[in-house]
Image (cartoon, rainbow, N blue to C red; front, side):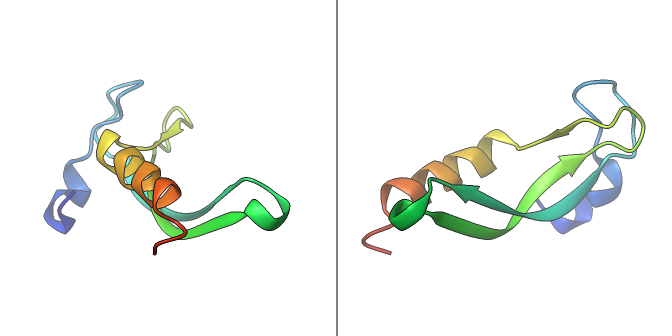
Length: 71
C-alpha cells in the first residue's frame, strides 16, 4: 500500500471513507516458538471500530512465519 493512499482508504466493513493505517505489534506462538513482528500495518476504522489486515500484509506475515528460522 502506498503512502499516497493513506487519505483514500475506505473501510471494507462500513465503507467509511477515512479509515487509517495503524502500525501494530503482532505476536504468534508462545514460549520458545514466540514470534514478535513490529510495525504491522493494520487498517482501522474510527467509524465502526473494525480493524483488519490486507491480503498483502497477511501474505507477508505468512512468509515471515514460514521462513523465520532462515531470516
